[in-house]
Length: 425
Ligand code: SF4
Image (cartoon, rainbow, N blue to C red; front, side, top):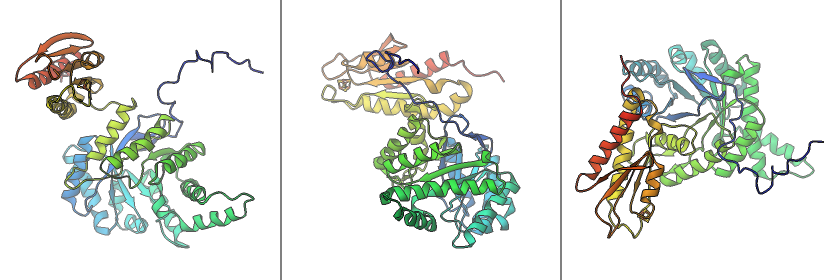
């Protein structure tokens, strides 16, 4: 018998810190982007344009890609949409935005791929919803046709089950089986099991048809946080397919952001998840790219990836009635986000920079010292001066009307000095 380590669980045991090791999954190559197999968690998004509108779709895909979406999915629902896909891919390539495109198919995917081989070739992955492939006897044959196209064109697929389009025949069968149990499960558990089985059984069927497991990503999306966590824990436990995480129909505004972050953070902390999409409903007039920013910020604040310098800012309180620090925090965040595409090429590593903008002397100098570069603004009644700290040392004190511009200049100068400068041609 193994001896117990007296310290392992005692008061001196080291507290756990950080996410658990990533769960082992098979790596899937999606147009040159690896999902799973220990690769960094990939950010993806989806357009909301009519795919047949080539120019509108190209514009939005390019925006999503420039915002940081490493894969972009688009609806392929009609012959016109399928015909548009290769032209969209070509136009994006000409714009130097070569993002892998994923086709989202429901009901008629088998016909669209058969009718438009150029679409089948242009897409980097096919998303197949096992609950929406077809009905009755046609379901199996239409699913098989989609898998055969993936085999023929050498493409991976995502088998994406969804709570809102659950395979009803499977759900009914599991409900019937449940009645036979000595202690029947509660209905919610049976439905979660149906969703999990829909994804896993479909993946098994795809493998039987000849699609290698290294070309299959799985998802099983629901709209409730606790349900999503339960479903993905089971999916992770029962197989080694790469997993696409997302809370479906997350909602609008802060609710969608909070619900998605709550669910995905728990799973990623447990090492579950190889690619994420944040399914936000855009607020009227809001850019579609917001979902990409949220996905990046979720990964970065969890310490899983770095995309752009992060600004720590205090919430403000009665010690500073000025809105100046709020405006400065916003200006700094917008500035570094705008510069990052260029820095990514010319100053790699700048995405790890940490910044602090603080409202008064209470926590200002302390928090600023923890950042690479931080500023502590004067609170109400404090002397009108703003000390700046670089890597823990006070370097300069800013005063007067141009504090914001001067601080932004100091950030640029810090990046210039610490992240190498432009690469030689
Ligand atoms: S740093 Fe100062 S202004 Fe900001 S929250 Fe703390 S006490 Fe309030």
